[in-house]
Image (cartoon, rainbow, N blue to C red; front, side, top):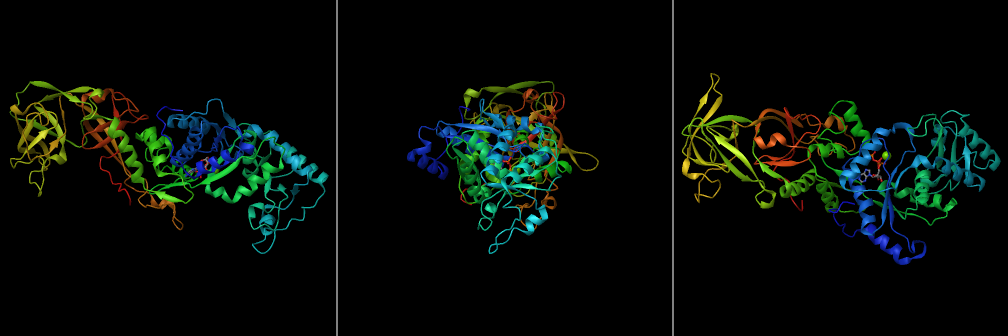
Length: 562
Ligand code: ATP
Ligand code: MG
């Protein structure tokens, strides 16, 4: 576990665990043991980060342990590619399962044995209703479900189940069902399917199996086999809990009952959070891949410049509750900003450059300024920037005819400060034949050297950033906005694919960054003064063709208490 892992505040899950530990009994002398059980059918997203935080964080809070288990009982979309990516993302977040890494598919043989055990005990039977007949026979709240196969002899079910395994029947021809209660008000207990036939290769077991256990049968077995004490999952499993309990109570695993506790899924506005939908965005080319910096995937967020600490802080601060709620995307950004404000080096980069000539600065002369890397952390050190007659400034920092209250450069006599360098005054500009400004002309005050208030002069104009044209490095900068323009792309009645924001990516080329950034390395983030926090793109950037991603702007739109 990373040393900087945030301590977890008490929540209702911990209250339940405290109750269990206090009651002793089956929990006597037990270490709290949780698990994180992703299905390896896609990349992890920020919703999973919450579950990881809850699973690993809860174990850590109690000095317990947490397993990582690939829940790979459904061969349809599972793949080894995802297994490695999932491990990488969890490690990146700062959590470690040590030697407790499991595959649910490793238990297939045991699961089969437990199923046979249930049949022998008269608690499961092979049902030959087709999927259509099954749903036609589910009954409703007033009518019990029906299965004509429920009372078939145990021997017959044993024989059929063995032949199901041997591959004698096609997909959908039969299922193994638990014999619980066809009239239950909880439809999950109306003789739920435990096994189905699926002639499909599995990413690990290949063609060894053509029957696969259902989640509701497999999951409690996995938990019980691993000695999990508390199985933390999301709310949609609440109504499945009686079935979970039924399974562990009716198989011969010499272990007390793991307790399932449900908590609310994380939803965030302006994005979608299901692997299926994220996959669709990738497959239809709406994004450049699972790690597109606009994606809510952990690999996308990492590439964008999110830090593990900011995601842990986010997970802690959103809290853990039973009631669903949608968290503002701006809160996620707020957490990143709070982290980077403290840790990112300050540098200067001009994103939309225009030349600026200091006409009274001698040609051929140059000097250096030593700037602090961080205004509040002298221990982070300093870096050097050069200064000469030819600079680049931000095009929007000049206006020939200033609008009201414009505090930047214009030929109206207002003094501005070049950050860390000199006070300048604009004298005019040069335009090309189309009327576009190609050069801003300024004069500097040689007595103002020494950077911000060192000379004690108060000026009315803004402090603007700049880079020396002689040493500036070219870069591409990618600015991101919400992937969706609709705050609720997932809401009922909407097709999320219709809610995409056409302006979610803006690519700026020909940006000019200060020389120190030539060595910038992912994943270090920098504050580009007045612009936001930026990080080298770990996929597309090259030493001779730098690419930066804007992780987040400086302006905080999150309002506490909103
Ligand atoms: P998806 O719909 O994105 O595929 P899932 O629940 O099917 O999600 P799994 O890989 O099965 O994904 O999830 C692993 C764990 O992460 C589960 O315990 C699940 O409850 C949890 N989880 C998934 N999405 C969220 C979310 N949005 N908020 C909190 N926990 C989540
Ligand atoms: Mg799933």
